[in-house]
Image (cartoon, rainbow, N blue to C red; front, side):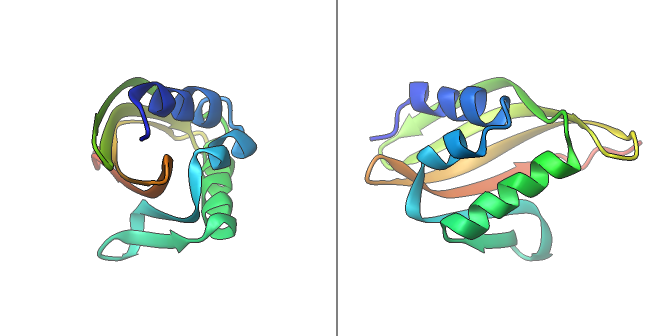
Length: 123
């Protein structure tokens, strides 16, 4: 079972260090990432390790200083939630700071589905 400590490491060692290899160690072979934005009702669905890795890399390119701070995690069986504050700056200098969360489904002690949500903050 995925633990709170593992979710903490996912954000600390993967996201906040911008370490794609570390991030992918937490993801299952058939993982899915549903980003917070996109044309579909789920945002944009990225399926499979290669596409998930590419989507995570796009976050780092879009926000070179991306951080997930003040993270709080909950795990209940094969489901989990992480709440966080996302902070980053776009390439054109726009600062972003929003509350958000990820809803997880776990399979075989890995993250099978990461579905992201965040507030739409007005200027």
